Image 1 (spheres, one colour):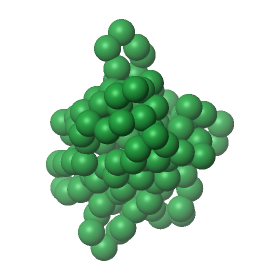
Image 2 (cartoon, helix red, strand yellow):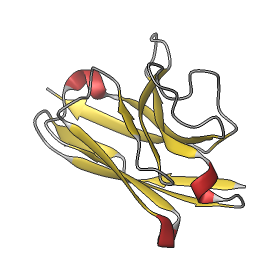
Image 3 (tube, helix red, strand yellow):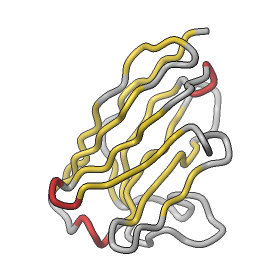
Length: 126
């Protein structure tokens, strides 16, 4: 099983980045796939996730209206378009998969993750 994330980098506040996550070794459509982030001294936060089987998505309140998640089942890839980035978005972003799917009223990965990959660092300068 692999979840390979890419696309992080350094950007000024107000800028954009697109993260990609290529999944392999499991059935893409059977999982909610997305990102959680971890910043120094802060709790882990489920940022966004998508269930490609039914199109359900979830966004944390902190990113609603700025981030957009999408998936390409033919490429087993999930994308996170991040616009109007803020310094508080600075964190290590990890791609993860959860077989429990997206649970109404709950954040991504509320009960944990089945798989996750190495992080990609996003740094937003003010």
